[in-house]
Length: 298
Ligand code: HSE
Image 1: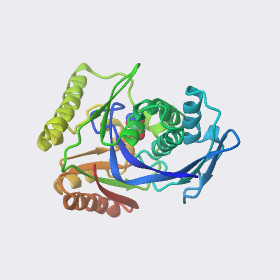
Image 2: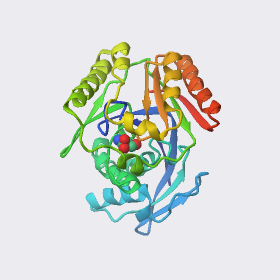
Image 3: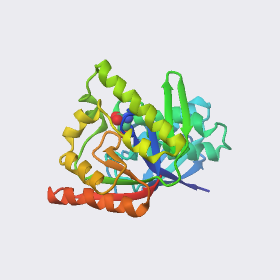
Image 4: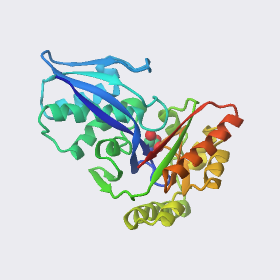
């Protein structure tokens, strides 16, 4: 028998927390069906509208993640995974991460949970390595654990679940332009100034303090990124106008979701989050760029 796994879309970085902070959305998300098979090896089927997904397990993010998990627990069990993907690949809300997280989570469940969910992050990260050339955890960790998650350290991996303020809602706009994580990482500067580092870690710490204190104002004013956003925002047409429109519509803050091209904004109610999403979409429409919007609780 197969089981159905839901893996949420996720927002990585959250402004100041490049590669170390992410959170899960209530929706949208991907679904997979996964079952054990009698023969060994991983078989992948795709029942979603996105046909570009490679079906060979060694070229598929979920296939690679699942194989890394099976190798680690020394299992020869075969699996069949059927994708019902809803999160568009390349959208910047963790599409590849959702696939990888769902595959390892589902297999672990079918094998009687030999590992706790936190320990699955390392395997799902292998899918990210295949997708983008870098094994970042800021999408897969929240996809697996839910809520906000801090990656305190990569070596060794130290994953810290964080509290999620009750009223926090998120608006996402996905402008239909192509922006690969791999390319959006290549443009980043390798050196930063001490002055910028001070601003950045002030904001990162402020964000986390805001989560613990449920202090929306502190959280909002900490949503600033002086290191990554100036470089990456240039790759997103209309970025400054969309951000301005979100803030004008009452958002607590707005920034690039992961490596883009999506933007996220926070509000304290779903109504406000809808207004913010529509305000950003109006900017896209005025620039004749098609876009999708999502509004969700966090
Ligand atoms: N932290 C990663 C990046 C997330 O910004 O490249 C990619 O979704």
